Image 1 (cartoon, rainbow, N blue to C red):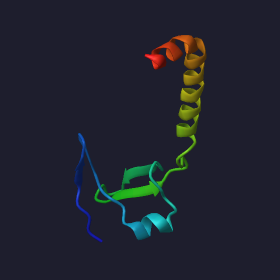
Image 2 (cartoon, rainbow, N blue to C red):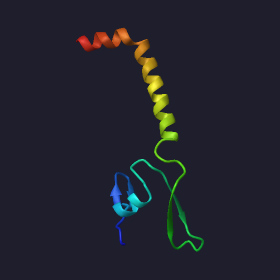
Image 3 (spheres, one colour):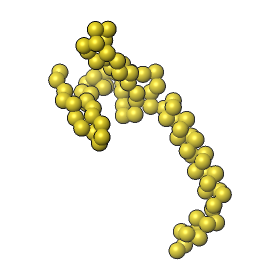
Image 4 (spheres, helix red, strand yellow):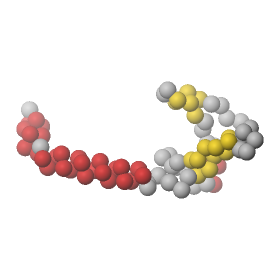
Length: 84
């Protein structure tokens, strides 16, 4: 199956065909290991142990705690701004 390298912002990428994505149970946000084969002639993609979650869940949890802390600390000011 042939795929083109496409421009994605300042980067470039390759799309994964739906049937392969479904067979490997991959979804947006999942991480893939990218390597060259031993001869350095082929690109190997493998699902990482880090599915969407893991690091992302820890970051989201930390952001949620920081947001709650900020909101608690500045609640009166935020409410005053909301009334304007």
